[in-house]
Length: 163
Image (cartoon, rainbow, N blue to C red; front, top):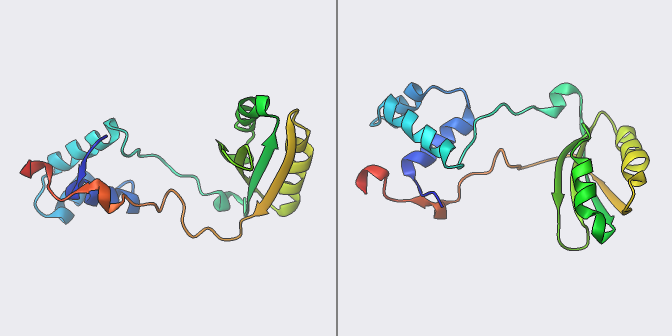
């Protein structure tokens, strides 16, 4: 497990606000770090799998204004096969296998509720091994992975420079 310190955490916060921010600007905001030191820390965070820098597509900007969570109950011997198949559909933004009342959880993006309905009934409902679906329209998302912050318990009080 990679240990991050207060400086790493501040760098992560700046990158979450603006993924295109320059290392020199982060260094200026931190006050006591060089651009080179900030670049080194960013590279290390990426190499250790703590962060990734990528463009995030905003579905609403493409007219996909409806988000739906769909829970699937499947035949037990078909869970992984069905989950993999669901990753191939452009309407699907998230696929996960779960433990509990349902076997697979997906998120569907669509232009309208009729499109969600058609996808769930005409596509998902006809996949061999799918026994039941439960669909919930998600009108408001207050927090998702892109707003998630590093929990304080993972941030060392000591900076790498002090070690």
